[in-house]
Length: 251
Image (cartoon, rainbow, N blue to C red; front, top):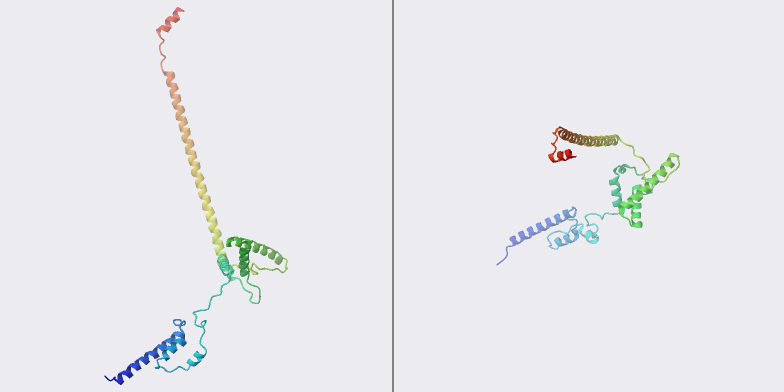
């Protein structure tokens, strides 16, 4: 049977419309997060092979200089240094240090990074865990701060690598927090003192009750002994036996 030309043309038109829609969707996805990993060149060639879509103007340029694999990645690889973990731990221990100013004109590394690098160096050189290396570097930082403070008090230049060069001023919130901490410590000390006094009073009362009980028992025992003595004294004398009296007469 002969094919209907109108039906064939309508099918081709619908097929061409679907291909155009696919190309539009592909172009949209190539610019969004959904389809960044899909190769735009391969998708376009697949659609153009059908013959129902015109070749885009940018196709030849894309074909001449195809995108690299790095351009199709979701995001660049994160750069991580060995001391980054120790830096995060430092700021977690000392959150106030986040507000220290940074000298943008200086070529020296930040003192927190120097601290973390020194800690990492001690860990690798002495083969010790992180907490042991932390104590060693904290002692170094304390000594550096002491020497630098003495030089600065005399007006002499000082060098700091592990400690900050600036002293942060306390704000009103930190002052209130410090006062609340002192009040809480005093209240805790007062409560512990009252509790100790209460325990001592209870122990003294217990000892006093025990002493009174012992005295009462002693008095009762003495009274019982005295009564027994009185009973013995008030008891009538036993009559003498006859045999004993006859022997006395004979003598």
